[in-house]
Amino acid sequence: MQGVWTDEDTESVVFKMEGDSVYYPDSTSMPAYFKVIDDSLYLGNMASYLIVKHSEHLLWIKDHNGILVKLAKNVEDEDETVFEESKPQVLTADALNSDTVVYYKGRQYHLYVTVNPTKSKVVCRAVNEDGIEVENAYYDNIVHVSVFQSGQRLFTQNFNKQHYRQKLPDQFLKQSILNNMEFDGVDEHGFHFKASVCTPGSASCYQIDHVVSFDGKLSTQLLEY
Image 1 (cartoon, rainbow, N blue to C red):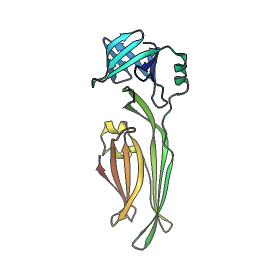
Image 2 (image 1 turned 90 degrees about the vertical axis):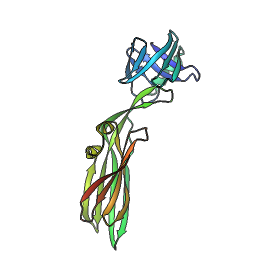
Image 3 (image 1 turned 45 degrees about the vertical axis):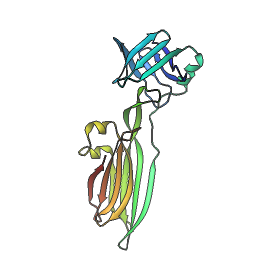
Image 4 (image 1 turned 180 degrees about the horizontal axis):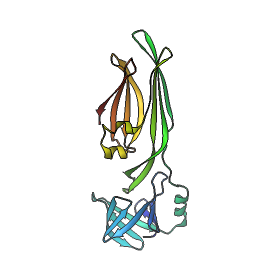
């Protein structure tokens, strides 16, 4: 199993087996342990593949959906440089800032929202373009929201994803990040801020509506999945 394995059809590098670890050529996928038990190849914590054919220079595997991945061991030295140039990194979002002026019933309000990355790491499983399940690491975010009226602070608070632990499933929360928070309008109830808690790299998101009343009280409601 040791060596660099490529896709038989495209000749693109899929992974490298070295010792008891598997390494991927992109900088977002984390290295993982691998093992072979009976007729199955296990990569990382969960992914398993049925070994259909295996020789010194050939490896055909099927995932649980029956998708066949045909791999060939490559002996070209230049393939090793792919791994030297793509050391795994944790994905970090850029800080986002918004400064909004709102008029309501003759009064002016200033709304500030700042999304900042933290050092809290979330590891998510995904399937890469070669059909191999990998683990990608992301940094979670913290969001600061402030509301001012004529220079007087009505509301200020920091939010992280744990703020929603009573509203969202535990398993989803473990593999998600607080993706964003944006101003979503004003009405007689107050100022609406819509938060998005998402699983990185997928379409799985919860939308949460925060309402800051004109006397600075906060209420929270789950909108949709």
